[in-house]
Structures are given as C-alpha cells and as structure tokens.
Amino acid sequence: MKHGHLFALIVVIILMTGTSIAGHMIDVQNEQERLSAVVDWVVATGAHKKLEARIAQVLELGDGSEEVSVIRKAFQEKDRNVHTFDFVTGTGRDDIVILYKNTEHSILWRTSRAGKILRTATFDFSDRTLHVVPDADYADLFAAELKYWDNTLVRETKTPSPKG
Image (tube, rainbow, N blue to C red; front, side, top):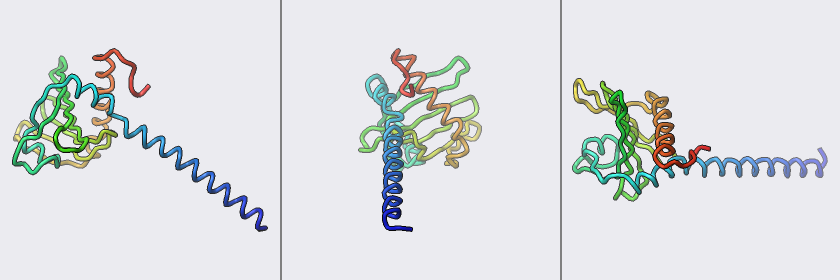
C-alpha cells in the first residue's frame, strides 16, 4: 500500500471513530437526562418523607442505623397497586427509589437519574422479608415503571412526553 493510501485510510478511520464517539456522547447525554423531568416534578410537588432504615440499607443508601430523607410522589390504582417515586435528599447523590407494590409483594429499584438500575430488592408480604435480587429478575417491570412515570408526568402536568 502506498503511503498516500495508508494516510487516507488512517484519516478515514479517525473520522469514523470520531463520529461514532460523538454519536455515543449524544446518546450518553440523553440517557443521563432520562428521569430528570420526573425528578424535577417530584421535587417541586412531592411530599417530604422518610425511607425506612432497613430499606435504605438493602438498597445501599445508608448503613441501616437511620431513615433516609426523600421527596415522594405516590399513586394507587383502582386495582390497589401502588407506584412510588422517591428522590433521595441529603446524600449528595442523585439516587432515586422506585417502588411497585401489588397484593403479594413490593419491588424496589434504586436507580440513577439516567434510569440505570443500581440495586433491586423485593419485599414479600407473606413472610415480611426484604431480599436483594438480581436486577435482571424484574428488568421488564422496571421498564414498565419508567413508562408509568413518563405517562404520569404527562397526565399530571399536561406537558409533552419527555420521550417525544
């Protein structure tokens, strides 16, 4: 291969890589914003509450010695299922706890503002136990909860969906 062709090939690879990296940076920025509109709404309109110390410990939000302050929005459906969105305050981090509760158990997710699952736990009502479970066990339900909160934001604020 001649030097000119090799140079041209290197330039093309650099340009392609740069474009790919730039595209990835845009995707990352959008992902970092995934729950920002919901967080802003919850902070502006939610109630100041406390997350139980043992739940905070299981979700790695504290050492279990004290409750953790949150700002909460909660909704109960006609079928008695409950959805809560807690924005954790006072830790210096942007942690969020999303809870889905039906008649048998609760599923809790600690998530980032980007909507990335950081920890998943379940609470079983029959034996009153709280367990950490693999994030993948309830990933589909977590995706449904994110959609629930997107739709709730639109319904409650009458604003366009943050997902377009």
